[in-house]
Image (cartoon, rainbow, N blue to C red; front, side, top):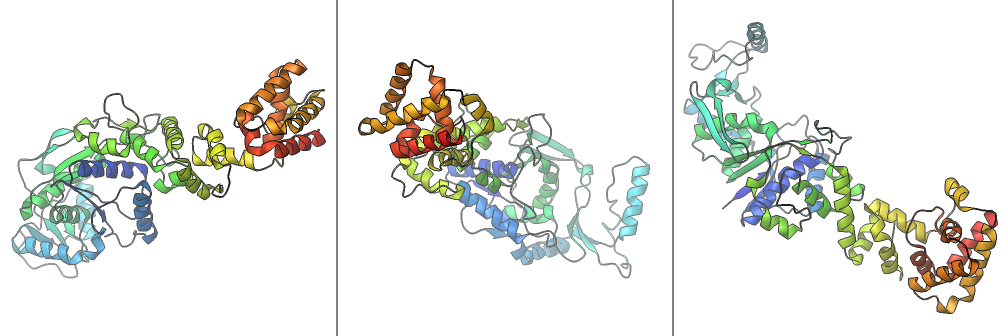
Length: 461
């Protein structure tokens, strides 16, 4: 059975690069009827944050990426790690190293002076003498001395790294706590992980983990390392560019379907298709189609996708979602008409809520620039006459089309350009010249409210 995992460290928020990695792992497991596991790598007690852990799980809940079984926490597995450290020591595959920090620093300086890559020199690898006093040893694993460490990366192809590049690295610190590359290999093996997908910043951790796998006789998973997401200038994505907390995308009014669709296309493709339902993602995803090259974060594309998903979302669901953005249409009989008028204009739920508020809340102020553009010498008379027309036609104004015909008739009778009534009318109804169609707005407001807003602007002019 194909088993994948996502294993974040709770030292900060879950950003979109991490979510993309999780998405690819989740899709591959779901496509194959396998398991997707969530493991919190919280062995760094000094930097762990309970708040970050909650935020990671909250993000998974929001985007709807369900994981199998309970969440694994490395901090609860220390006894397991100790068991394997003791096993490696007893089998002579690991050893205690008594080098002091001062000795390590001196060795590093000597190597750098010789323009060598700093690395541990193995001086305690076969040590049988009396340990120096006052030194709490670390535990180092015996890495292979010669040859190559080779594995086939699912994206990058065959990777060959000289064993000499991997020193006898530490698997347990002097206080007994295990190190990252050791516990990751143990956990992936014991949890039956068959596919490890992660960012290519982990590429050079892989040889070390392979050393652990081999020392313990574990079967290697298939490793796949994803190229990074860059900003539009081709540089590393920063928080300003979008590498921010996944939940901030929710706050900004993005839909989870849009964000997942966007992340799917960052480095993966299926022909020219841009829009994928969740079911299509699961059925079409194939790791062999992941690009070896870095992908480019494009906010405009994310906004385009989000706009698409907003338009496709049923009104009942949108009504519920908009409550988080200060708009409650649940008891408003006009909700369908309001959403019909505004759905096309909101790229985010924040924008959609703003468009809705323009309609349902009477203007308290008017855009100064739009006022100057819209108000002419005869504007008051034009608005008064149109207000009178609305009041007199009340019985026939039942649909947006009726209001549209009323506007056309008024323009024709007055022999004026549409802008002479359209611009000041829009300012009167919404406070500015932005927003939905005038016929839809007036149909939503009704005659009385439309007239009241027109009269209010007249009084101000």
